[in-house]
Length: 417
Length: 97
Picture (spheres, each protein chain N blue to C red):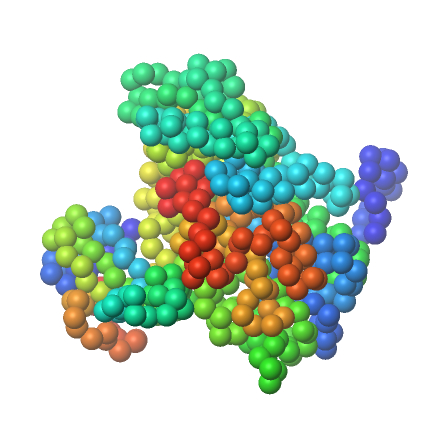
């Protein structure tokens, strides 16, 4: 792998920037692998990377029915934060933020991680109480989060409307300064390039259509649109399609798949310095480095696999944005899309062994999977390599629903689901 | 915006309806008598079908009544709606909603 650097860029300039290599190969699938990951998004590619890098398993394939980063990795609003309420969640999401902080160096690929701060607005007494509770709980867990008055929030984010005449006036905000955004595609591409360099085969346009099990019930092979591939370790990182994939092995999960929409405006000059989220009036917004306002909200109201969603959900979100930031009233929206997110009853993910030997799953991230990409990938790789969970993902089992150990982060995405 | 046919009121905008999840899940008569696994199945596990599924809806901002629907989750096309207590129409039934 040719390392990227300022010097390499300068040197290639003398050749008119020609002869750059592709980031990863396009190999034909081999008949067998030591480990296979289903889903070449950030989570799946990252898991393959950590398996190869930290656990010495090199004969790995990542199978992807579409293209690298074409699912939810390329469809989210790129927000990263770790100010979750419960101890288990703080440990999980802060694990990811710590990996984000060094990810560009680790991968030698600029993922454009920008800790510009994530501010969550409080509009009523309930919000104020809940967010203050979060601030204190986070502080006990070593996660930064601070309470701001409405005036301090306005200083941090000047476009914000803090007029008392608003329908939902702003009473204050919780700010995580270590939170921010990253370039979503770069995360998938960076992990793909680094994993490929360690010998991982990334096989696109290869849909898994069956999971074969041996006489003992353990995973034996996967049937794909490009033939049968044998493996004894299978990790599934298929986001909204996890129920479908694990159904092939007869595993039932507490998941439902909903469309989650996002949209971007036409690009404008830098006007918006941070990420702002509002639970009560249902919207979140940031500005990409390209200049587009990136806007999202809660999921659609009913399950679906359409990757579209209803237009009234988007227009409701835009009404909220226009109330919070009146200067955006005349902005034009450029694109609107949906991704399919798999939601658990307690709004916390599952990163665990399944009842089928050799089958592992990383799913249930609902509306908040992007922020966890490096952490989820690292923990799935750990669980697959050691056949037991890391202490951080030990609580995130499938059995927690049977046993009553829910991690009830129902307000996890800061929007009501 | 979808049009959904309430079996009582006829076609209305989807904004009048609320979604109630997978249909035909039978509540255990005496929950304390069943195993933890069976209760987990009842409370949490869902088919989450990619394709045609039966589901509950409620005409919340209309007659207020619950009914069932058959919808294709890959297209959001409603194949049929029917009253609670009626049998699920065969899949691929003629579209009436």
